[in-house]
Length: 154
Image 1: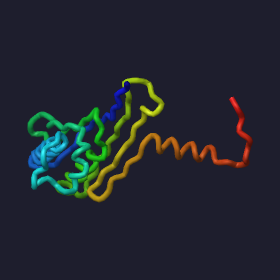
Image 2: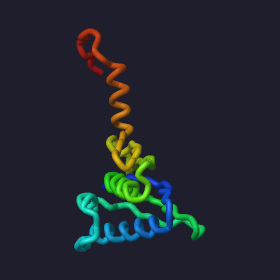
Image 3: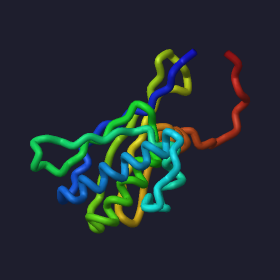
Image 4: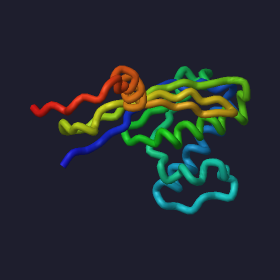
């Protein structure tokens, strides 16, 4: 049996300590929902659908006066990460953006196990791509049929 992983690790800059405390509290609430607890009435509706996919962790960066958070995961949750960031941007930095990458990995060699992607998140949009999408677009351009040929056998 193979274990599949989606890894990411990046610094999430926040403008103030208030924003950092809010993000940490929001993350704590989402982790509780992820573990099966009821959502609090204060938990944002925009994040309810992805709380079950909240497979990432955050930690404050030090020194203490730094407001940034280290966001990391081995368990995926890319959609939850994107919506969490978007929620924070809308609340604390509506003109800002965050970009990050992730990788797909596996404990055993599998043909479908490797790849990754990237996201750019703003208060208004979330744009993502994957290495699979990129590869498909590039190979489709290279192999557009010019003439029909009979397939050859190996």
